[in-house]
Length: 214
Image 1 (cartoon, helix red, strand yellow):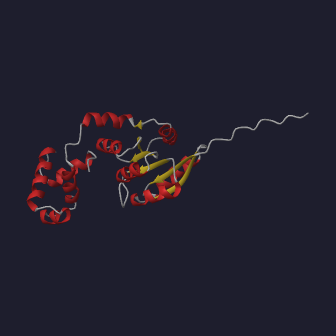
Image 2 (tube, helix red, strand yellow; image 1 turned 30 degrees about the vertical axis):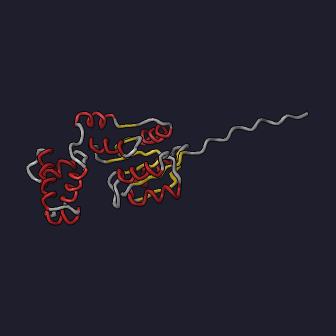
């Protein structure tokens, strides 16, 4: 009488990762580093924020790594859309700029992790595994800075006006773009400038950007 060997358990499927980064050299380097991990597979790469949702639909990743600064849409905007359509998808925000406001906005967009790009590759791979297990991963220096900075004082409309004013548009141009009256635009700009203790709209835009509120 012969006995057969028990079937050995199959290896778990690799973690499927989508990588969104507009700088091709950075994107390819990150993909190569993650590809060295035996339990991680980069299944899609995109260079624009407005390509992220379609890529997720096509490739069904487990985790999406999103750069903040991308053409078409920011990583934060893409994250917010993904969080609504794919609530089980884990979102990791990557950034070159450790701005406290970005961290708050990332968490509000449904992100589970927020890391700077110059973090070691092993730390990024570990973050992918942790978010899939339901943990949150936040760069400790950014977390401390966000707590020290306090909440964003601007309303959504004030941010909209400042964002549009960044290219030097006149009040009339801002009013046309945002479908507001010129008086309303002036009021929003004045309030934003006052809240940010800025001398003018250009300085208000700079302050808001530096803090990650735009």
